[in-house]
Length: 194
Image (tube, rainbow, N blue to C red; front, side, top):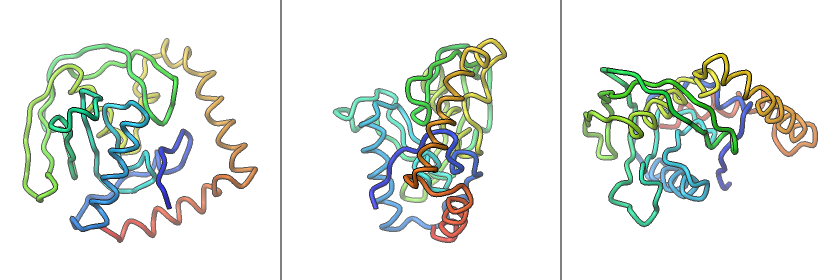
């Protein structure tokens, strides 16, 4: 079954991800699919919940350019261990296509994660890369950028958010997307995989 990026309010987006415990062939295939989808959608990063996988896994290429594979990164079980400063800037999300609003984030963060060899990685990132990391790690915790918007941005986004909800519920009513309960069951069953 080909994966696709799920749109709000898909239950996977609010599902708290489980740590990746095993690096196997299936995980590598899922990562390949995630990279492909990220580039197709012209994104800078993609977290596993956005493709309905309940794992702490993200792919990133802050250049957004598939022709720069050297900038491509994959991280397992990432966490932010230090944060400094603040910045406000426009943010979008592949699970909310076309919605952009200002979001306040930390300017510089230190992250810890594991690479695909299972080795620990630590790095300090700032500005756009720090924004991308915070956005993707939020996804792993079931937090969405609409939750991070200030009051004015939230009001401005309200109509778009309602349209996403309406489109999703209509697709469910037509049988194009399973019921929330079915999706939750699938996510729970997948959690034992990696």
